[in-house]
Image 1 (cartoon, rainbow over the protein chains, first blue to last red):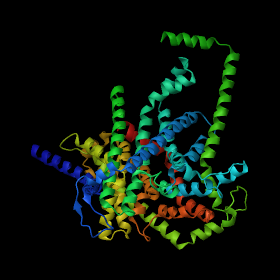
Image 2 (image 1 turned 180 degrees about the vertical axis):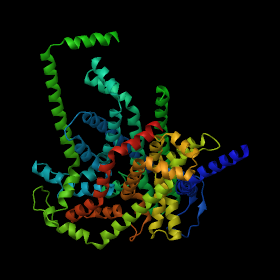
Image 3 (image 1 turned 45 degrees about the horizontal axis):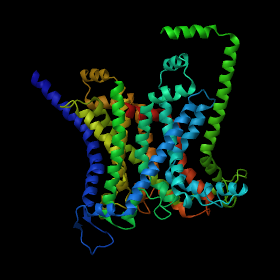
Image 4 (image 1 turned 90 degrees about the horizontal axis):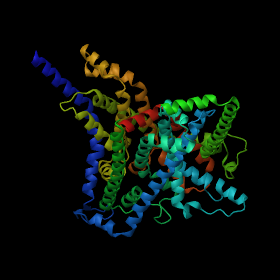
Length: 300
Length: 297
């Protein structure tokens, strides 16, 4: 009797693995095995444009090359700057907008739907649309309106590439933050809000001292996911500024792309990719820990 | 408690007029908030709205920005009869349909086993789930180089299956992540009862878990479909002329300053309408899937 049970148990255990294994194998190969290959490539001297130079193991030379180049630091700095600024704008605007939406506004669903739309738009389309129909100095709304007001429109994309990119990133990603934060606000129990009012909390206190701490986990989740998605954003930069002027709006993914397809340098591109991943993982890890800590504190 | 009760008494003691003005103040505030919200919403949507309008202009009308014009279907017809554009649409549909399908076929059973499966070690479920989540964090740039070289050697650059393979690999974790929270809502007692009644694991999955988590599967599927439809980085780097998808096509407009604004708008409209409409329908369950999976996970 016992033996039969045992065999059945073993069988279910095997079955349960069978449900997961195909997924695990595909995901492991397409993400982790390939990433290990990237790490391996990053230790090689390998230039596709120079077949005469044999592929050679060079250790950490590719990394040292970047650590010695001042351009690398400015690209890292630009990546951090663009990401952090976009995340900050998204969080602040998303939070304020969510507070506004937490009222019984007529036609609320339609207004929310309108605001949500940019989030579902492909970044290359939004990039070219902004570039040609709005930011263009002769054919765009920006050019026409500033001429009508008596200003000489300047090419914003060449003069303020980073500001424009932060603005466009935020336009695309703020709806996501707004949606998640709104879900957080609506998860606050009604009796808590009632007792808050009875205790005489004014609007500022209610919003920033009561509601904000309660939904801080929602905000952190939005920031964490937003970080993962914004860091890898590539299409928008390619179609609006193409990394320029010069390298002033390069980000790490863009630099990797340039290393492979313009410089054909496999080794250096891989080293850059590895460093990108390390940076992302450090940032995500910090955020994740603060979520865990809070969960432990409040005993969720 | 005592303080609160005395507060209630005071409120009850307020005369009617004060309460009335309080109420009026509230209505005024609501009107102001509503106006602000609607102005923001319309301004926020205006670039997309103007793009939709421009799609109904002729190329000549589109040169100067204006809101008043006689709409025409000329540009849309031209774009829709363009062979190359239709090729990109076809490639995109291929990736979306097969990519979403395979991601679900692999991801749904995996999420099911993660929630209900019994393994030798009790921590296996949590650990494997956590592993799936960490793979979401990996930016595609991390795998681009070896993939590009591999595909070049295997001649997969000019085949849609190469891109499809990456898409499945990258979107299975998203399916797992979103479904995990939906399946968690299914009471485990149902599964145990089914097991006692002689249901195999496979029957439990197909006959109980899938119907009960239907909305979750739909949401995960639609989200993955939107992601694949919009994905640019991998599509741009891993496809050739005949296999590229719509985002790559849209990127080609980047150099043509104001030359084909109407054509650009019409193509953009075709490219962005499907995901926007899908997104409108799924916004509620999307929030549930994203936040539950993350806040509690």
